[in-house]
Length: 488
Image: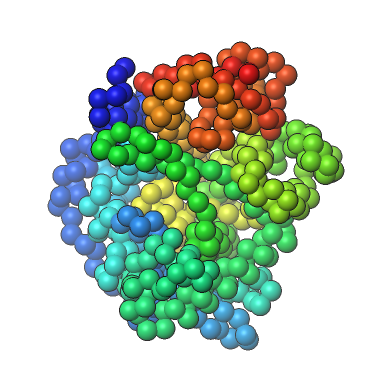
């Protein structure tokens, strides 16, 4: 395939559509779904029993170009020296009815798919970026998760209810992070809302206490490198890492807390829930070996606190290489999955977050499990029976896990096609890397610069996850997203 004709971006889009179909995902919306959206109008923001919270200084923080805004947040003082953070989640269910044509597409894919060439949204853009988005300066219906936090970061109370909210400031991660860290001015949208600066600093302080409390219980602080292609005139010129920052951590901490509150709320109501779990790692013995390579001794049995302590030490000792260690640990921990927790039964917890009760509830525009959870919440709040029978919920848990895996594979495959384009002229060059996978299916290595992953075709004998290797590039295949190395 000739990729030097100025059409690399178009070629990647064709690949993305093909791979979506191969993985059982629908790249396009059905005519019925599009017709349904064409006939919709914005849902009335008020409803029976909904609180009017539009006066609170709500704001959104997301990527610069994001329009599918799932949540807003705000903080306020509470009784007894505590503070509250409120997370408002877009009421997507108000316009996407269970069993509708749009719901059928969302149920098939179960997630938005973010490829290097194109985004495949779970919902049509007129919904996700407009009618069901908590858009700038728009009154919107929402499900609010109220989190009361003590000075020690422990949960002091919580509630869930329906409300009407208004996004008073659409903010972006990088600008907010620079401001919070004292490296940049307040974004214009933030400065335009009286009192929002103090409110956002309160949110940040609460988020940091929540994070510290989780880490004390053994939450793992992992950091990986996610590289995005940079295009110039349709040609890929570089792969640019997507850096973590304080604003991203703020939102992550608040969403983790809101998801935990949601799971416990449903349990207290005697309603089944779709839990997000990461089981106790089966390859713990290999994690112990990786730690021993750095002179650290981990217990023979899985211990989240001990692993968290080891990771914190390595981050401080070698921040440059910490993402490589993180990737190794993530591979050995195993993938997350969805399971049903029924009243009176205990589902596994989330080993990586060191929490027992966890669901996905804060991104219903982008993830179908969150929309399922929202419907369960609204039924519980209204005193109605659950909208999903146990058998259907169990089937959906399996399906959502499978489709999430498929979506991840699509994203990785298109990313590899983009990387193959970038490396096409570097055959024979040598790179330093780290083994990210080693099984009967093959041995995989991620090179450090540029940050891409490929298969080791020769000389892989004895290599295991976490081992450093020097490799030589022997072949690329853009169409299939193959990057082949041999041990140098």
